[in-house]
Image (tube, rainbow, N blue to C red; front, side):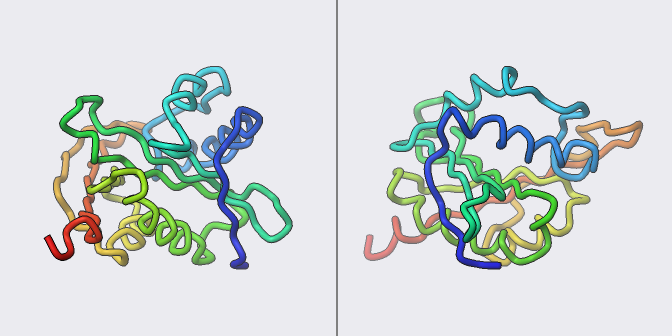
Length: 173
């Protein structure tokens, strides 16, 4: 099921973005949210994205169905970190585990320089083995482990920070 298309998210997409995000909450593997979020609670986050600097892309299949999304979010909100972003990828439950994450991550890495991005960060729970494997496949490295910082259903979980420098910025320099 390849043939993915990417487009900038619009306000009309926010409900579907939230719907896909909420499918991950109860798994306790992907997000530290412990309850589903609302469209209203994600509005400010949505507005922090911009097609020219911090994109939020909708991922569609060949039937134009929204099956996922990917975002570049500013890291830490300080000017010196402007070339560093956190990348997040979320897929609908019916398409997870089918290799689409690879296509989405490859697309995202390839477009990062267009937005002045030199460093990509991924914040992934240490017990989320599929996501760790995906990002490491694309050259992301372990940059930090924050041990036991999240409590999910009475169980403490560690968070890994994976990072990747975007090589096109550093060739011939």
